[in-house]
Image 1 (cartoon, rainbow, N blue to C red):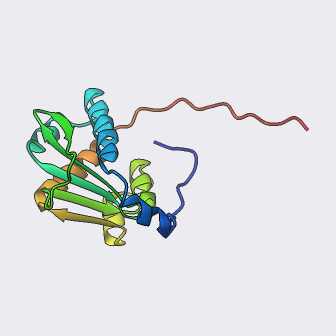
Image 2 (image 1 turned 135 degrees about the vertical axis):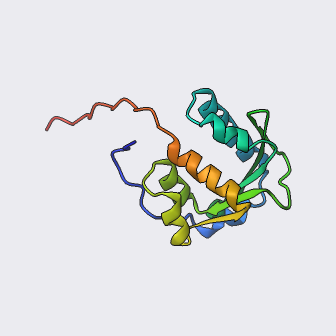
Image 3 (image 1 turned 120 degrees about the vertical axis):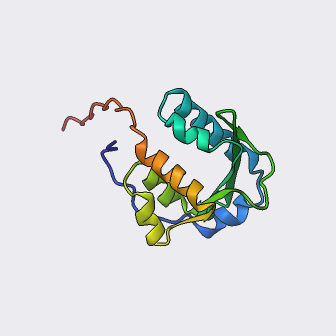
Length: 152
């Protein structure tokens, strides 16, 4: 998938995380779960990998935003956790730029991990399942938008 632009490395201002940690976190979980369930429904997530996520808890922490998304997979459906567990089966931590670069396939999880921009804590085997699942996703092609140029 090519976006036609590069997501530069950036870090949100510290004030964002200072405020973010004091805001309700459950909306992040709802949004992420909706996206994951849509991807599963569209067949973008391999079914064999989904089965290995059964009854596992996950936390995605966007460090520079002060945001947490917590969820679990039950019967092939991602479900939000309104309260984050103290220990999850798998926890991902990174700044927003790293997550966006991952999503856009600009960077792979291994590169971000070895550059210490992505932290993965928990069940190592489960981490590999998720990594391989992300690598296997074939993003659909998005239509290109026409470029509008001003007439001089």
